Length: 88
Image 1: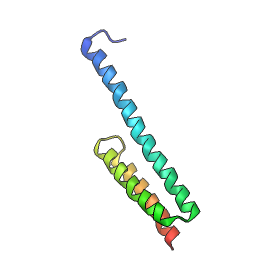
Image 2 (image 1 turned 45 degrees about the vertical axis):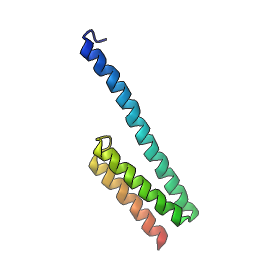
Image 3 (image 1 turned 60 degrees about the horizontal axis):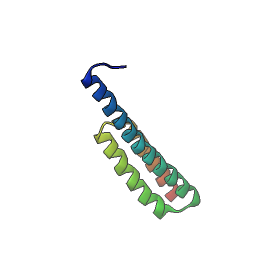
Image 4 (image 1 turned 45 degrees about the horizontal axis):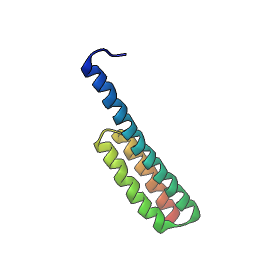
């Protein structure tokens, strides 16, 4: 356990930030699951709305260094391919 006041403070801040980051990642994963479900059920309008929302949330997470930019690009590309395949 840390004895220095600044180290104790950093531990507390890190815990808070970790919870916040986990919450954001969880939200994104939930939207992706809803997107996949909409694709399976053939609800393309809902899937398009969810795709835009997922893309926006991923880019926000990327800007805050929660998710790496290549992971964001890979996920967005994968979802876009699914959406385009469902349209065809």
